[in-house]
Structures are given as structure tokens and as C-alpha cells.
Amino acid sequence: MSKTKKDHTMSRRKFVGMSMAATAAFSIIPSYAVSGLGHVAPSDKLNIAGIGVGGMGLANLKNLASQNIVALCDVDWKYAAGAASTFPKAKKYWDWRKMFDEMGKDIDAVVIATADHTHAIIAAHAMTMGKHVFLQKPLTHSVYESRLLTKLAEKHKVATQMGNQGASGEGVAKTCEILWSGAIGDVTRVESFTDRPIWPQGLNTPERGDWVPDTLDWDLFTGPAKMRPYNEVYHPWNWRGWWDYGTGALGDMACHVLHPVFEGLQLGYPSKVQGSSSLLLNDSAPVSQAVKYTFPSRKARKGKINLKEVDVHWYDGGIKPMLPDNWPAGKNPNKSGGGTFFYGTKDILHVGCYGIEPELMSGKSINVPKTERRVEEELGLSWTSGAHEMDWVRACKESPESRKPTTSDFAEAGPFNEMVVMGVLAVRLQALNKILEYDGANMKFTNIGANEEIRTVIKDGFKIHDGHPTFNKDWTEPMNAVAYSEELIKHTYREGWTLPDMPA
Image 1 (cartoon, rainbow, N blue to C red):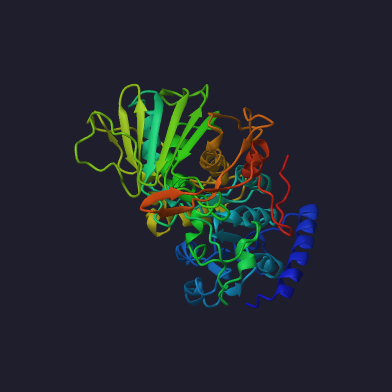
Image 2 (cartoon, rainbow, N blue to C red; image 1 turned 90 degrees about the vertical axis):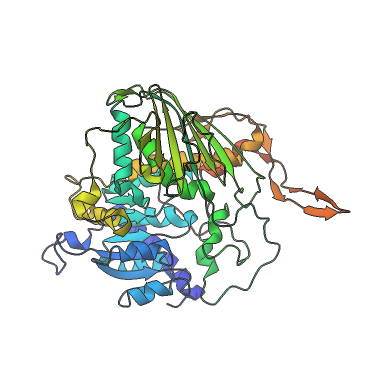
């Protein structure tokens, strides 16, 4: 597991050459699909590599232990020690590019659970090599990255799954069935919330660097993001609250809480979005946020409901929506980390995170036909013990022509994640003090003036002076708002890190 700079440079050069050759000449055929060459048959085990195996990645791999876990890659082998001991026969790597160089032909599929900002670059290159991809949520750090992964998955015909594991539980399916049955009528407003974050947010940028632990490769952790001095406040795990690496509570939890909203109402791109928050800092996500998305009429019907224009509201950091008038006094609307209210023309539907425990505010019983897949019943597994991962394994082993999609494949998860990270953009652009109008097809805001400028707070400068609280805020220099928004939609990667081209 050497992590010398020489190794990284050689790997980068070799990887770029190999990727270009593979893209130009052929798609690498997964080993299980090749017959007569000593590989296992499709009905047997996949050869899986884990990338980012210190936290949720290890949990995913444990749920995939029935397959062959052939390689492990992580930038911190102290944090990832549990994976090394759980899968002692797997080859260990620091750099995913070197792993692809050396073991590309021996890997059928990858499980990626790195920090948010490196999701897209790893998954994109894996798919161009013909690898099936299980990618933790949020799918990507930016809108452009989500669009790219959606198109690459379609082009290379690989099996994909986003790691919002509740999608393979009954809740999302049942919520959709209730909505489509017409039980609450046409939906005009949705209000969702989470009790996250449970990690620090709203922090001033550290003014000093810490010594990088010997077990951590900070350059590889940083990846395509801008390089900044290591500080123990960033890693491990707390990276979620920093814009360079994470997407805050919204990115972390909306992929769970809003999934039944996105699927049930057949949402596409929002036409308008606005955000607000507690103190917004340049580098750290705020303590609490609120976002309002407006989705235009989708023209078609779904089941017995019309897909009219709808406003979707999001709250986090301890903020909850106002309760309906007939909400039972004393009852907590939070179920497993969040909740959602669907306001229909006939009734109000309340569900928890992942769409669990649906209930009508009228008190009427729910009895609607089952029309959607029940993955847990099909596989005999709960979503907490592997249904989500093993449904992906099933899809990997099916031919693209007859493959049954997973419950959160990139065809759905990509557009859904664009909605999620669009909320992050709304929060970060709130200083423009306007309802932002958005052209989803072209990934751009249409009502930001060419000469508008925006600034954000670098640090709050809070002090107690003569017994009085004071703020001496340090601000960024004014930035062109159009350029700033475009950078949020499509990031400029650090030198040496690139994405494949967007398919036509």
C-alpha cells in the first residue's frame, strides 16, 4: 500500500492512457460475462472492488460478502482498518487509479463510498471501463456531475444503484401507490424535513493546518477539489459539513427523505428555486437551511392524479414545517430521521423518511392496490441487511437488453440528485435576494444579470466586547454572480483530475 508521490504520478499517466485506449477501441467486458476464459458464469459471484471503505462503504461491502470482494481502496488506512481485517484476501490500494491500472480486468463492479466531491470522477471512469457501479448518496457534488453519470450509465449499459438504501424498502413503493390511487387528490404542496445535521456545520474556516497523519494521504483525499491545508476538523466523517467535500444536511438526507416525493410526483427539473439559512459561510454549510422548489406541470397524468405545478419545501437543522390543523397534539412528525407532508386537494398524506409508515390526516384507512416492486419480498432480505445491494448484484448479472432496473438506478437517481444539489445552489446563492429561475435542460439560471455580484462571509468575527456581542465579519471580494453560479453547477477540477466527456 505504498503511497509515494512517484507511485501516484506513474499511476496517473498510465491510467489516462489506458482510459483513452479503452474508450476509443472497446468497452471492457466484465469478467463474469466471458465464457471459456476461466471466468465464473453470470449466475456465480461478482468480483467487486470497494473504494472508500472506512464507513458506509464497509457496511455496503458486508452486505455484499456473498460475492468476491477482490480489492479495497482508501485514502486513510487507520479509518479503513475494519475493512482490511474483514476482507483480508482483498488487495489494498491508496489510489483508485492505480487499482484500475493493475486490476481493471479482474473487477466486474465497484462500490464507491468516498467523500461527496470524489463520487463523480471515480464512478465516471469506472463506467467508461464497463464496470457496474454502486455509488453512495448523494450521487454527486454538482448538477453537471449528476447529468454526466446519468448519460454514461445509459451509454455503457452498466447496472447502477445510488446508496439511498430505503429505496428498496416498502415505504417508497407504498407512498407512490397511495399518491397514484388518487386517495389525497392532486398534490399542490409538499413539505419535508430532516433532523440532521449530526456533524458540525456553520464553522469558521480553520486558520491553521495540522500535521497530516501517516495513515492519511491528504492529496488523494482532496482529489479534484482545491488544495487547502489539512485540519482534523475535515476528516474523518466531518467533511460532510464543508462545501469543498460535502453537501451538508440537505445532500446527505434529501436523497432519503425526498425520494418518494421525486418518484411519486414524477418530478423533473425545477423551474424556480430559492433558499435561506442561518449564517451562510463561504466554506462551511450553515447550521440550518430552508429551500423552496417550484416544479411546473408535467402535463401527463399518473394513475388517477394530475401532475400539476407543485411547490416542494425542504427544512433541516432543527427547523420543521408547520403542522397541519388536524395533526394529533404531542405526536412527533419525525420518523427515522425526517418526514414529509403531501398536501392534496382531498387529504393530507404524512410519511416518514424513506416513505415509511404512511398515514392520512383524515384518519381514513389506506387500502390501495400493490403495483410496485417489493424488493425485500423478492430477495428475502430487509433493506437494512442487504436488499438494496443485492438487488444491484442481481441487475449486474442480467443482460442490458433484459435487465430489470434497480430501485435507484442512475436513470432516476441522476435527475433526482440534480434536484437535491440544486437546493444546495439555492442556499449558496441566497445573497442575490431573488427567486432564481432555472433552465434545467441547459443547466443554467436565466435571471442572474451579467453584471450582478455576490459575496459570502469567510468568518463571522464574533467577539464579546465590553460585555456586548459583536460581529466583525470578514467577506470575500465581490464575485460575478453568473460565473459563481456556473462554477457551482459545473466545478473546475484541480490540475491532474478530469472527467470523461459528456455523451451527446
